[in-house]
Length: 486
Image (cartoon, rainbow, N blue to C red; front, side):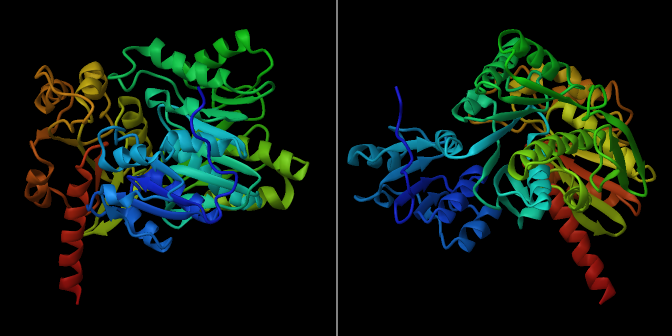
């Protein structure tokens, strides 16, 4: 049965957003404000980077209260973190008969208003989306781009609004949320086991991605990574019953124009070449996996340029795209450079799956071969840690030293005691020469202050809250350094 629909026009329409500080919700708020909606929102009182984004839109997030939902509100959009029939504002909306949509449902409704492209995969979707936005701006495309994290090149926002012809959005596989989205094209970066609380095995998560690909319209396009076995498997299965789909492989193993012919690193820059486009492309972000993401973004950009401008990516437009790619400085918590203090380079990355960890660390090692790499990692969810324990233990080979902590729990599961942070520490200690354990991240602050020295690279890694350790340590050392030089 069809649910509520978005208004034909948002101009002057009162819309209330519950959980507005979430990355996706704040990004959606930007789009709705651009559509001239009269927007209000509520959330917890903790301060997030999205507070500044919302203030720039003229929105102050209200504390949660049933009084926030009033007669005359035409639509309530809420984060999936808040349940109908439980959260006071959603109870009030139901009592007043106000239509409600989850964030993913609203995103799906929005996708039907545009010529839309969805970017999906267990790894790489945020970076690929950020790169696509960067390149489409370089190409002069009329597009709206929505990424799953703040992007430096988007003004530290998650949304880039360049026009209204195309919509490019990061789409999430968890609980099949991406099935709300209606794309004409899909980029598929990777498929492998993850979200074990919902997908118990590879086949279950593969089948979810396959269902998403099969949702493409007749003649739709799948741009998939030929280097990822799960993406190749998904594309092959889609081809069996959807021969109408256009399949575009990309990567080192791909045939055709999106074959990555070479990849080299020198002077903290990566240079790669493609079979179908002339000249080198340069990245300032480490990792062969980022070159793959950039290739996917280039393939999508070329396709949209052809549709918008009637010809391939070439000439001055190609050179503008090439320049835009070299200027790309990443997104929040994706190889994010915090700064340098006392000769130590501080970085932060969201990688939390063994495959992503291994690729990220190998890329950083290639970029910074002369630095000692010290990695602080916090595993996310008990189910993922238990299912991928050996993968985690083997993923840190490029690191000189690893610091571990307790598992960062998810509200969607409860621990049964079978796996803890020390379980991972014991497993990894048997395979890595230098591993230390501190139950709480900030317990490692003083030991790391004493251990780190000039030339080191300190990386906080994972989807937990250990990023606070890196920021605290960097800010502390930076303040001391500034004080001593003044």
